[in-house]
Length: 312
Image 1 (cartoon, rainbow, N blue to C red):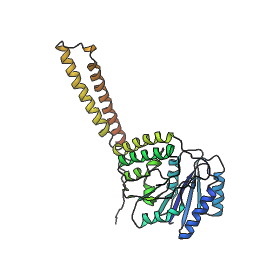
Image 2: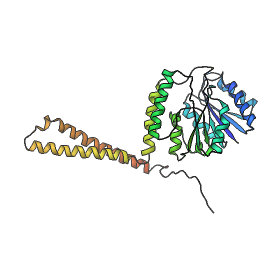
Image 3: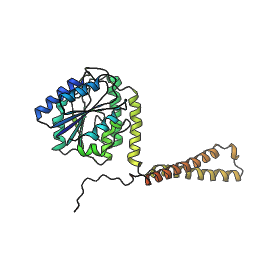
Image 4: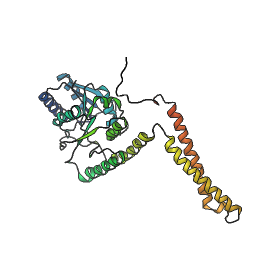
């Protein structure tokens, strides 16, 4: 299997026949052995019937249907689990991603040695106010925090080596941060390709303004997990120790001042601040300690990414 194409979709009945025709044309022109895995994320229109029809016409088309809408991350994760191709391509179903970009992205994976190639929609046809400007701010923040030099983290058109999609888990709304997840899993050679962005021909966008708020919260989550997921004491313990140290030292100073008659203990704001800091520090330290106990008893505590193994 040369290529597996994963297409998450939600209420895209109008665009699916055109997308399938376009994909088939590109695949046949290049002589690829391919499969297209369409993941219906609980569509309420006739999208699934069209997927079934496409499968009857061409066995290369396969489908996965969710009982309800779980989100793009869940759709991609299930699609990744079902892939068999040496190179895996993801693209959206709304015809804004061009299948004609696939051959070059596949070449970059196989010949240039990239683990992952992310599309960059350099010229966009979306609204500047509601999409372009927030997207640039989001990408700049992610680029700064992750150290990955990509211009468009959330582009739906991406290419992966098979090992990458079989080694990562995409959950929640983490599809925006697949490059970060891949780097965290040990796949550090991540490339970028300028791709064509097309105007939406059918339907409406499925993403609202809340994705920008959720996006930054998800970024905070994944950065924390990638750095402290296996060693929570390094985060909570450090902050807790500093807070406790400050609290106990401040409390000692306040008590000394009270014994010398310089302040009234219960009227001093420093007394309450020192008590609060000491208690907070102890609670954070205990949180880190409990986190370490959970990690040490986890079945995945010693899970490592093994790239190559040589045995007798």
